[in-house]
Length: 222
Ligand code: AP5
Image (cartoon, rainbow, N blue to C red; front, side):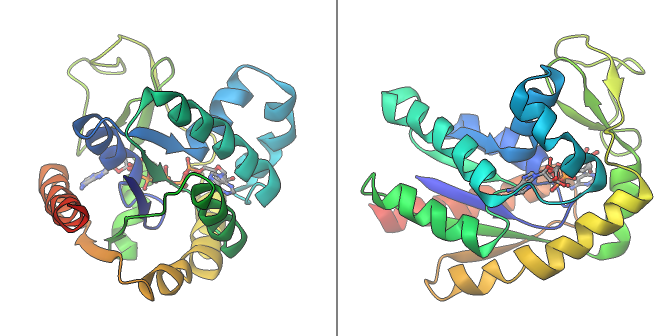
């Protein structure tokens, strides 16, 4: 099963992908996380993409598609039942590239979940976000605080603010979302696979709404 989460920055895609993936043995493919791991490890790819991330610009499609293809090959080896995509695809070129890659595997996107949220909620979510420097778990200083201030509940790693959670980069990311990514809802909508979920509610309630949408999609597959 292949599920795409679409929503603006701060809508909770990463938070929900972390919850959804283990329930169905799906691999979470979050291109932003993959790029940040490359930057953290100071690889050639990390050096190439750092400037794009810092400025809130999109990494070129060929680079993004290639990092996703590498993850799909891991699924081919039998390590998961499919994937939940978080932050990918973000452009028409990426959506077409993903379709092509899945067609090669006799698969296709089964469900696209649009997380709908009022823009005024996004800035406070992003400003309060903290991410574990070791395992990547996402927290919010007010809405999802850790048990011990500044420390990850899971691995004890230190919590840090993302380099691109600055006002300037956030504005650029939101503007790119409206221009490049939101139109993908029409691309997938014509196939009848888009389900809207209200992202402006408690994390557990968003999760329950996503679970319902996934259960309905699974029932259609059977
Ligand atoms: P990426 O890492 O994908 O970041 P993003 O798109 O900016 O999305 P966010 O991580 O900001 O938002 P989210 O929806 O995951 O929210 P989260 O769950 O963290 O991309 C970063 C960069 O990488 C891009 O700018 C680009 O440069 C590059 N890139 C990545 N993918 C690319 C691609 N496909 N093509 C080209 N370039 C690419 O939640 C946010 C906060 O809110 C958290 O603190 C969380 O605790 C809190 N929260 C979540 N849900 C709730 C809730 N229901 N109530 C209250 N608080 C909540």
